Length: 155
Image (tube, rainbow, N blue to C red; front, side, top):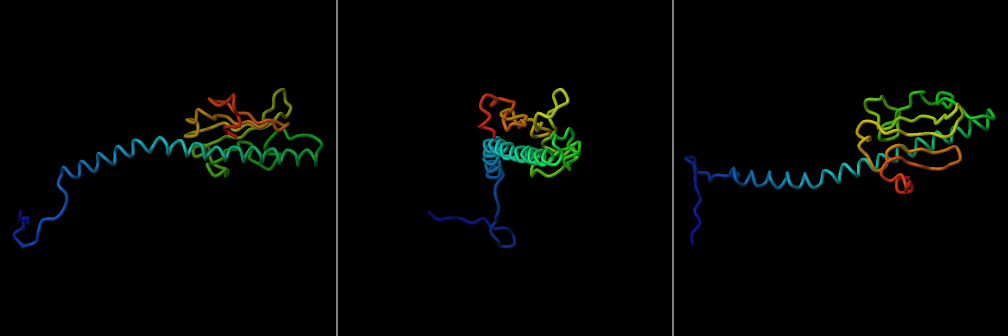
């Protein structure tokens, strides 16, 4: 059997993809994207939890230093050298609320220091497994969300 090349008027063979080949390639790419995207989003949410944990440990460290210097715990983040409205991004850096993934605050039941809490914001609020992280003044780690009964899975 002999192969035949179709030539244009200029003598060059036709090159490129047919519409059907292009549609098949797009369909395959769409299926791969639909399968991979949820896993990627879960990995991003899970990795961002580290920023909350690090921020809480930083607040606890600053509280302990404040206690050594003042014989009492601070009742405001500003006393610890942090913004009173403390928001962090995915890298744990201070951020504005619109781009923040966590809001850090002190737990002050009855006006006394009891620990620190990281509340999820924006895209991180969709992390239903490990929502708000908390670290008590005695070092007890807890979390709200689907894994509330097993905080070690989030911490």
